[in-house]
Image 1 (tube, rainbow, N blue to C red):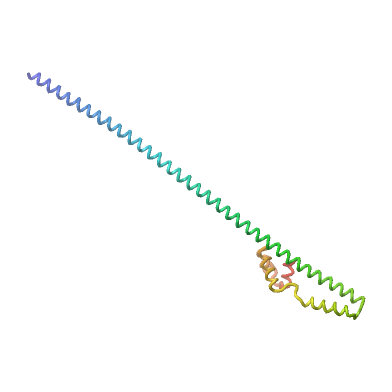
Image 2 (cartoon, one colour):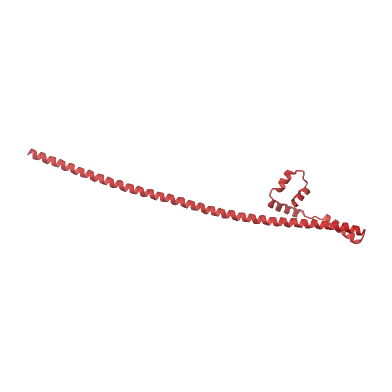
Length: 184
């Protein structure tokens, strides 16, 4: 009987041991499945994070490209405006110079005519009129102060800093000589 009890006790212990082994194996299997799911979730999270980071970089790059395009458009528009302003200033400056050259040429021609006329006749009424007209022309200004200021502003737009550099290079230059340099 003892041997039967002993064998039953051994069988019971073996059954308990077997059951415990099965439970341990089941726990290990559950743990392996849990690790597998954790790894899958971690990989999915990393993938989603990587996609979000890539998307943010892509969006930021697109925004930078769009901003750069807008900046280029603004710069181009400003450049065109500046070029138009410069072109307009150059045209006005050329017009002023042409007018002054025409007036100077007219004065020179009148002086030549006066000299020629003096050689022919000494004191005729035409000579007196011509002399009077010459004196009026010499007394009149070729360029008014307002026109001179406008001319200087246009000249500075077309040739920035020229007047300053001229004064620095030649400090003893008179205003009339400076005007001469600007017109020629």
